[in-house]
Length: 346
Image 1 (cartoon, helix red, strand yellow):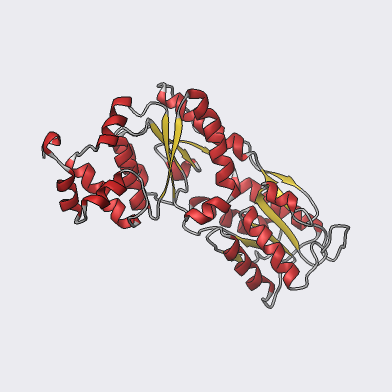
Image 2 (tube, one colour):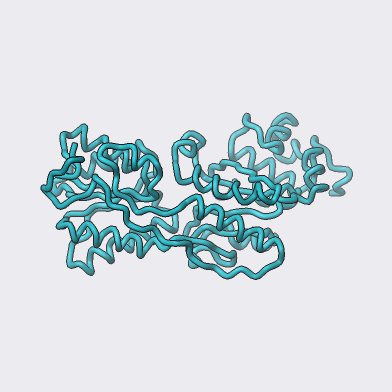
């Protein structure tokens, strides 16, 4: 269909929605469901329609604007320290280039593909940052075919053909397990994130491998959605099991804080009865009592590195994949030898 003759009526008819719904979807406003938004954006792309807002963006060539779509509920994203720090790092670099970060929350990978395609075809972005990769992630072939400049946050085995930045999760997990084992722990469990995510797969395998190399039977690994509520449920299930762990590793700090609350609720002393080790190490870990031991890494610097990498790509430079500095162990009051009471025990 001729782009000059396509109207909002045509888009609404193709998507089977009202004109108001089309307006809400293309302007990124609430009021339409995720599947409906994806259907509308697919219709926009298929027909080649440009709203007035999109036309303005086309004239600007998306200069300086980078996209970031995150598959998280809005409430959870606001509570999760990792993404707040990561966004802060992105923005610190993008603002230096007089640009902006265009953030959108999506529900499914298909919705993200439709959104990223729409952003690119309507020239709302100059490039994009891709996060939360799965094994055999479907975004790669589609977005690469469109030619979107992108930096992928994830291990290269998950993110090809995009340039990638990632943390060495396998080595960090091994360090955490070896540390707890050196303290004398033999029953170690892990509370992981979403099982379909590539870094969850890597961490799960690394945990099992590290325990095996130490001659220990790998403890249970519980999958969650990264929320505090799911972290609490996972902790409660581990602590009521027949073989209760003496140490638990958590895939983020929000779940570790929730786990500490559950331990207190059940009358366990931390670290005398139970050692807890968090991931990411935001300020949350330092505000608890006892303070949480953590695998620490500079998430703000991670986000800044990703943004600089994308700007290098936009300048036409060849950018090799490389890891960012891996997480390092920061012992605090939540870990000790089994049965050892300390000043920080609760």
